[in-house]
Length: 263
Image (cartoon, rainbow, N blue to C red; front, side):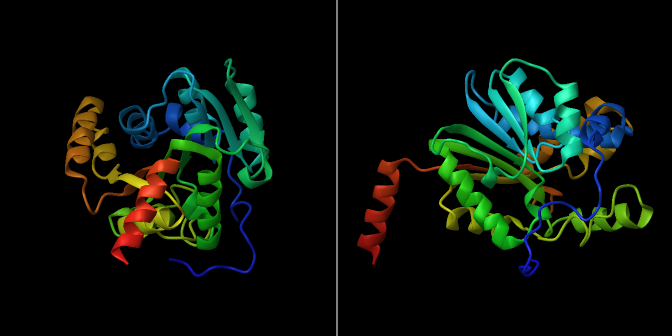
């Protein structure tokens, strides 16, 4: 992972258009559209909210995921530090039980222990490791016992570095390496960090490896490939997906008792 920096990162060094995620999902090249569709697919499959769940989408960008969560029955809040993104989200997505807030999660007022699910998609690679650790602890304090965290980030022990190099060299996206992405995760390092910050890891898998590129040939073929990738949980997959749960007080006591017996 990238060494910690003295100054915390509060935003990218590269200006990001507030409409970016929504435009990529709806009007981008077919591979880009499928890439963003994949986020919606894994939410539905691995972390869909129940009706009435209180959820937040941290690093919501233009609001696509927060809007999806509300459409699935959740009471959702999208959070982002990019004013252009929050302005776009507020103008574009209007649903009951959906709102958007500008700022960092640590600076906004949420009641501890009240959130059923927390979604954080491709954010933690944009901040330094000590900030990620603090962020995961903040998430834990806000989640109710049994509440879940659904999180994604690039897999730097997989094919992602090749994709990142190609995107930067061909200038197909805003500069990524060392500009947007400053902390690198693998399946093992992400699992360890989640456990160290109090989360019980239920699943760490990968997605978006070959499937998005098959969308050029046929969207349905790409979807079938994505399902096969889910089953294989490819160790070299491009994007990591982690699902973790905040332990209940009873389970935390059992773990502590078990640790004491072992020692």
